[in-house]
Image (cartoon, rainbow, N blue to C red; front, side):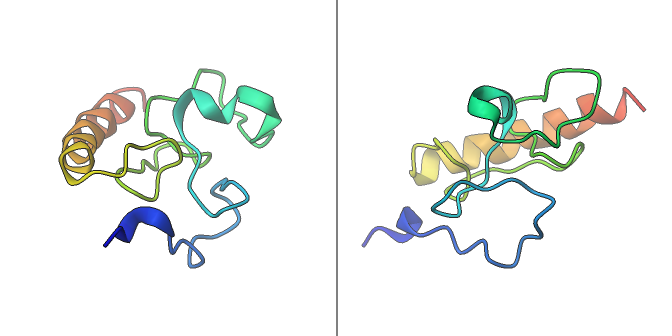
Length: 90
């Protein structure tokens, strides 16, 4: 069973950029190929940060993730650190 094959992100608002398959785009990928022209903050997006500044994504719903439990757990821990980093900029 491969539960990460379909992202189930239909509930996410259009404020958060998704690719054509529904995976959430984050970090440097937001600036590539014009995926998110909505990024208006005067800094590069942090890793795992979505097109809505201060909102982070981890796990199978993230575009380009490895779709493995161990990596999702690691990304979750990393997201907590990134939230703290983001809050320091406010």
